[in-house]
Structures are given as C-alpha cells and as structure tokens.
Image (cartoon, rainbow, N blue to C red):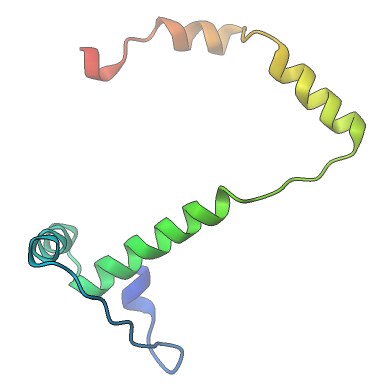
Length: 96
C-alpha cells in the first residue's frame, strides 16, 4: 500500500524526534498496522492531514462589496428546493 509518506524519499527528508508515551505509541502502532503502514508513514500522513486542516481553516477570501453582498443575501435565504427537500426526508444512518 502506498502513501504520501512512503513516496517521500531523498535529500528533502529530515528526521523528526518525538517523545510519545508508551500507551499512545502502542495505539499509533496498532492503527498503523490496520492502515497497512509503518509508524513513520502513519504519523507523517496524520500530521500532514492535520496541518492541511489547520491551514484550510485560516484561508481568507477577499471579494468586492457586490460579491460579498450577494453571498450574504444567499446565506440569509432559508434553504429550499428539491435537493433540500430530499435531504430533510432522509433518515440519518446512525438512527436506522
């Protein structure tokens, strides 16, 4: 099984040392085995995903006043339409 971490080789790789309590390390190792990865691959992939999420939460979108006003107008409208009607009729899978 290939992963982002497994694909990274060469001079752009650097060591990162972490102190991890035994119970957390065991849990990480178990999850890595389940995912078909080694500990390093698993931890790198998890760290990269967390970093991407953190950075995506910080994105700033700048728009002109007319675009902003249109966006706010759309947000202020109550949801409607065939897609919304279908969505509210579907039972949540965890309630089945």
